[in-house]
Length: 171
Image (tube, rainbow, N blue to C red; front, side, top):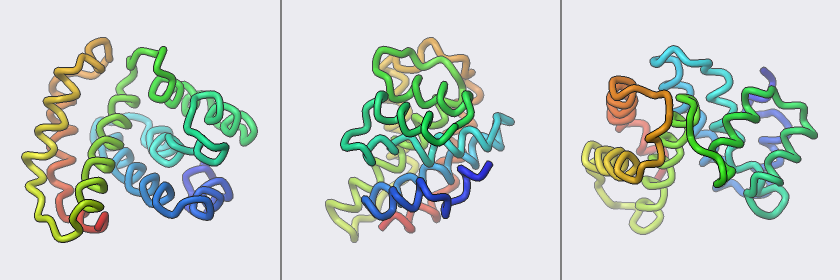
């Protein structure tokens, strides 16, 4: 899948438009790939979703309509489109395991980047932060109808906690 090459033109366009969005995509895709491999999901598809979950920014805002237009223009696989629609379109319910992986990967990266932007020297307790993210998302009901098991959620959480050395790249 050429779309998973960080030098693919669409990602180059994202980097030109916003280095912050580009690096957010790179980091999210990395976590998506790690988790998908461990859970034996289609890692190429989940990684692509990590790269392109905010690609709508190229057209002004990250609405599903903008994302869909870009995906169609670039002939993305239907599996990637389906997961991104489930994730971005607020009228959709999160069902697939792949979308849950994207949700948690994106949330962890967004949270850490936000905290580092407020204080680049902050020392974060990643275990507590990731535990709080999981607790909050689960309590919100957002994944209540997904096909992911509690065991897979625990495995995902463990993987994200194990990546604590990686998170320093987000500073």
